[in-house]
Image 1 (tube, helix red, strand yellow):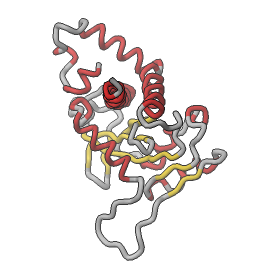
Image 2 (tube, one colour; image 1 turned 45 degrees about the vertical axis):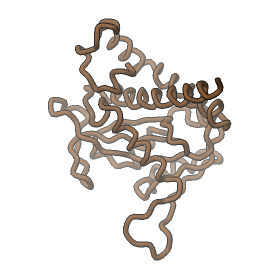
Image 3 (cartoon, one colour; image 1 turned 120 degrees about the vertical axis):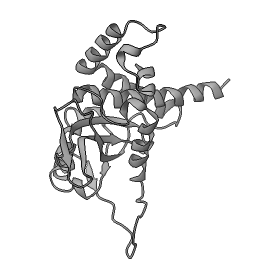
Image 4 (cartoon, rainbow, N blue to C red; image 1 turned 135 degrees about the vertical axis):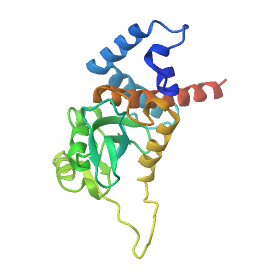
Length: 227
């Protein structure tokens, strides 16, 4: 599965050294539906924070953003046009920590507003998974329904960083550039450079698989450096 998300190959073209593609797809689809991939991603994120960065396993500051990507032409479900970017496809809403690691993903039609789609990043069990979460940073699109929902959670505050007074043109906003970098990292994983999946659940799972591969690589480098 990690090889697939990295190379972007078709299921039928899996090399002979791997199990039959039908078996691999069966387990990927099963793990995507029953939450196994989400659980694995969560556990590895926590392990990396402790082993590699010597931090608490749960983040206190989170960042939310969305990216619109094109959807392969033969798929019509969960498709829409992002009016701001004129992208006909789907949108990925993600929640990351300040290391840029993806904790939660919601894939949806591109015409759904960021703030509305972002609510699905909070439920279910946000407080259980993120017991230390104190603040979530996002842009103006998340003011309103998403911000209201976050502020309803005990001790969690939504904040939209403001541009420095008098600034013009493009300005790098403190901390929020991290989530943009997370989207940029996805370009190294050909399976998710655009959306190729029939279901939004599989789309989200491949994004998490890319994050899992990055985390495993980080942990391996740390372990190698200790010898």
